[in-house]
Image (tube, rainbow, N blue to C red):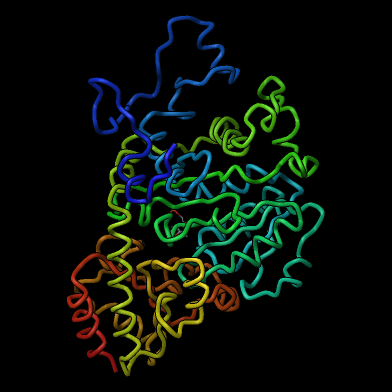
Length: 427
Ligand SMILES: *Cc1c(COP(=O)(O)O)cnc(C)c1O
């Protein structure tokens, strides 16, 4: 089949109506699906045939949105989850069990950090957190015989550290494990991690993919490239018979789609966390404008980052798309067309001055959200990352005065005017 461009995929993929069917993907608001014979339904349970039977396992509206994200990323299969948290949990838990270990960059979302370091520890899974600046040799020294994957974020929320794909992917593959990347901030419009050797991609679709602040959701995409059977002893869940599925072996029955099939038929079956068809409908519609929106988020953010960096009361500005930024070169290498709409900056007056600026903003509002059509701000040290102590904050690249500014789709001069009046009020 012809390989279409990202704009075409964004509006066309996932739904191919036949004669007289709805042009738009319908919201299939049904928990269940009808079959004519008992045998037909039985075959579905044995995974002998595929078809819809219960929405926790598959639903046409969800499948459409998942297929669209999958095609945009260039994967072989994808699954929607109820949230980004569920996506990251499932992505790791699909190949890690009690007694296993994995490695994650410290520059990750606060919720993911808590999940990996605290909650998964209670399940007997140990996570080693590494500085994203770690040398290749040192990174290699963190692997153990029971290490099952490496995890990072394309552009870290909120530290805006750009992941050095080459270094992390090489280390993961050298040790026979997959690289999992949370691509939420870059979106498949600006970065397709599979092109750089990443094996599994996750998303909080709550962010740019939705982009309008209406639906919490997540997604996991499988590149189909990792050779599980080559390291069969490391991944028994994929390479040995699954007793809960009549002895079926995922790698044998599903080939390249082994990982993502297990994710659905095993984890979603047992743990739930499905996205509602209504939410899938929203993100499906939002995906259609994602390429256009990302372009505007990025051009607005660059203009505002430039303006902030010239303001005498602003101590520092971080934006990977801004020339001179520590991650500018990595961003250009992996995201030549743009990064994201999120900027971070700190006031010279420190933590208090930053908090005060936020209180004076009128157009940009304080919300626990990011990547929205409307400009918004957050103070990670007192909001999303408040569970972390100062050392952990520093490790995650978060200074106490850091304001996370998520630039929306407004006129850039209006956002600048709002920032200007707020900063003017602070000493
Ligand atoms: C928000 C976010 C998450 C968590 O997603 P939810 O949809 O809020 O559960 C995970 N990763 C990144 C990078 C995020 O920004």
